[in-house]
Image (cartoon, rainbow, N blue to C red; front, side):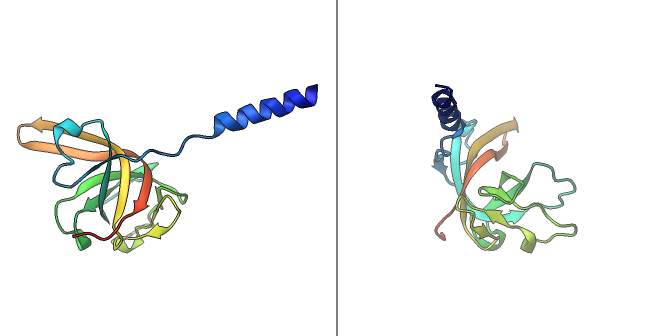
Length: 151
C-alpha cells in the first residue's frame, strides 16, 4: 500500500514539474514591431544579433540588438536574453568583449553568433514617452530559434 502511494506521489510530482514548451509568438517585422498596438503581446522577431554599446554590469540578462540586415544594417530592436549556457540563453561576456564574444544558444542548444539570423520569442514592450519618440524592446525571451537568412 505504501509503495503504491509513493509511486502515485512521484508520478504526480513528475507530471506537475513538466512545464509545457514555450509557445511561438506572433511574428512581427522590424517595420511593425514598435506599433503601440503590439504592447504586452507575445511576439517573435527575426534579426542578426549585435552587442549594444557598453555593458558595464551584467546580471541575469542583458540586451542584444537585433538588426534586420547582417553586420548591423538597419534600425535595431533591443531583445533581453537570459544569461547562461543552456538552451535559449546567451553566454556571459568576458571583460573587454567584442561582438565576436557574443554566443547565443538556440532552443536546440546550437551556439550562434552575430553572423546568424535568429528568431526570438518574448513579450514586446512599447511606449511613447513623448509624441514621435517610440521606445520598444522584447523581454521574457524563452524561445530562440535559428532562422533562414533574409533580405
